[in-house]
Structure formats: structure tokens, C-alpha cells
Length: 153
Image (cartoon, rainbow, N blue to C red; front, side):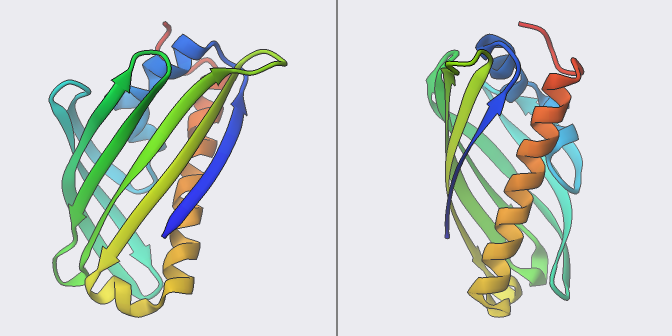
């Protein structure tokens, strides 16, 4: 499944970059995230609880950053295992640019895959859930930055 979207964030590009690399900010923005530890250099470990249709699961997994161009872009990839519920894995290419009206244009392209019981729910439900999760993450991220509740550059 693939998702493509962009957001105009009323914050300086370096401030957005710092927030994208801050474990506390990421934990606050990931829906259902109970724990997030690590660093951009070493990678992150996460525990996320979610309900996809009738399937509830606690996913544990790792997140790594690659193709890092400071202040501009990176690829964030992760894989989580949810026991009998299955697994989810994917990657997002995130790109930052100065917005013509000020602030930052954040663009992301996500490619994700699921397996196990979750995959048996059908692609329409899974795609809808993935879109909702991405929208919630970036909405929370944008709100946090624009409210001044994120690390400063």
C-alpha cells in the first residue's frame, strides 16, 4: 500500500527537522505509542498498541533512518511484530522544503506492508487504517510544532 501527501507547517525548516529526529516528539505523535527509545544515529525501538478492525495488537519493533540529508530529507523504515495479529513494515521518504508562504512544506511517500491476521482483514480496511494513522501522526506533529511544544533548532 502506498500513501503520498504533504503538509504546510508554520515552523522553520530546521525546527521541523529537529522534531523529526526527536524521540520525545515522535513518541507523542505516533498513535498508540507506549514507548520509544533510541536515537536517530542508532535507530529507535518502539512499542505501539493498535486496533485494526476487530484485531487488537501490541507491536514491538525497530525504526531506522537512512539516506539522511540534514535539514532536508531522510528515509524512515520500520518493522513491528504483533504476535498472532501479524506484522507491519514499511518505509517513508520524508522531504522538507521552504514553503513560498513561509514555514515548511513536509512531503512524504509511504510504502507499507502487513501480514498475518491483519492482512486477512482486506486491503480496503487496512489501507483506510494506514491512511488514518499517517494523518493522525502528521496532524499531531504539525499541532505540536505550531503550538511551540517541540524542540527548538
